Image (cartoon, rainbow, N blue to C red):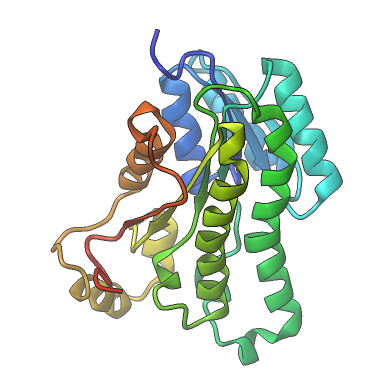
Length: 250
C-alpha cells in the first residue's frame, strides 16, 4: 500500500505523449487511470497496454471543449471508482503548427487553440470539482509551457493563461480541500519534438538553458508525481518550470 493505491486519476490527452506516460507512472504506483482522448482508438490502445500489465485503466472518448461530454466523463470515472482524486489537464494543441504568428494562424485556428488549451482546461476542471470535493489530497495538475515566458505567440499566450487559471483554481477551490498546480515544460526531447524541431532550433534552445542537459519525458512525469502527491501537500497555485534553467530570470 502507498499513497497512490486505489486513487483515481483522470488524464486528458491520455492516448499518447505525456498523457500516456502520466497514466503509466500512476498505474505503476497503484492508481486507477482514466484516459480521456478525442482520439478514442489511441486512448483505448494506451489503456489496453496498461491493463495487459495487470493495472487498472479505462479509456473514454471525448473532446475537452465539449462541456456536456466532459460532465459525462467525470461522472463515469467517479461512478466506477467512488470519486476522482487527480485531474491532469494535459490535452492541448501544440507543435510547430500552432507556434506561428497569429496573422499566419488566422482567426479560426487561434480560436480553436484557445478553445482547447484554455477553455478545455476550464471545462474539465469545473466538471471534476464536484467529484473531488471532500476527498483528502484531491488536486489538479495542468500542463502549461515554457513558451509562456515570454508569451510571444498565440500558443505561448494560451499557456500563460493556463498558469493564470491555476492561481484562480487554487483560490476558488482551496476551501474545498482541492489543490491546483501546473507544470511548464521546457524543451523535452520526446519523439515528436525530435522529429519536428530542426537541429539548429534544438541547439539554440539548449544554449539558453543553464544546464547542458537534455530534458526527458520522465522529468515531467516526476514533476507531476511530486506536485500531486503527499510531498506537494502545501503547494498550490504554483507553476513549476521544468526547463533546465531556460529563462530562469523571467
